[in-house]
Length: 403
Ligand SMILES: Cc1ncc(COP(=O)(O)O)c(C=O)c1O
Image (tube, rainbow, N blue to C red):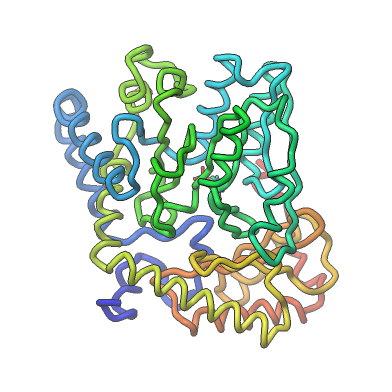
């Protein structure tokens, strides 16, 4: 990379002395990007009406265009949204409203779907008496062909929308979304691609993928502030899609409807360009090389020193590595939560742990603010958790967001 790693680490407001190996869930945002966001907020507050009526539209379009150029997405059919969850809800609800999802036509998911998107699919399907079908893709597969085979074999006559991940969240598998879109389109099924992790990590070409709906988070791997994501819709669906918030410009098209949903803080959307610029300044390929090298290091350390094999087909482009946690643990969300909390309290390590199907998985994210010492510290702490009496670790067990 052009800049010294120590220097890059200081570009983030992360606490010193910690090992933050979970960029995949909520990554840290560079300070220059947060400054850009604050400048937008200040400009707004200095003259709110002038900002909203005279500046906002131009700033939002400029930001959208630069993001779209980077991601090869059609500007006029792309809108900012707050996050991928928001986009998924808008897509499901719009297809319920237009009848594509109905009593006789369901939503197809895979068992690798992100849980919030699964919930949204069920909610919107139930709202119209429809159904959700989940195709079981294996966790253990040597090749991507083997991994997606069940999806390709699925009967689709009663499916109104297929929803597939570009990069699966809990299992970190990159799916061949272009080929899958072609497969579903040949059978008359529209496709929603959930690319929450893809922008920045992969060289995404949204238009070339050819999904009917493609969403991606900018606040994960494109260094944008939290609450910035986008949704691109194909020509065919551009008049069907609506946000789930009805506001002043309802009926005026995607751009007006999505970008004006009551009074909101648009600073993350506008400052998303600063995230892109941060990555460009480091060198996009340099960043990805760093991800690849660090993830390879994680793989070799976990496989050769801890003796744990990668379960899924490993694509070197993926900046997250997922493994099954050894030991007799209950496969329950609160167990993953307890181990995560124990790691933080005892070792200042942040790691993603999740109960997935019959397994407990841990996920290590690479990022430019990390080096091999952070990976070593994280894995050593995890080894300690495995060797510590379970009662000690599980004392942190409690439901998340219990109210
Ligand atoms: C595949 C996938 N989809 C959707 C989401 C939801 O993203 P957000 O919380 O930004 O809506 C995530 C979050 O990690 C994800 O990994």
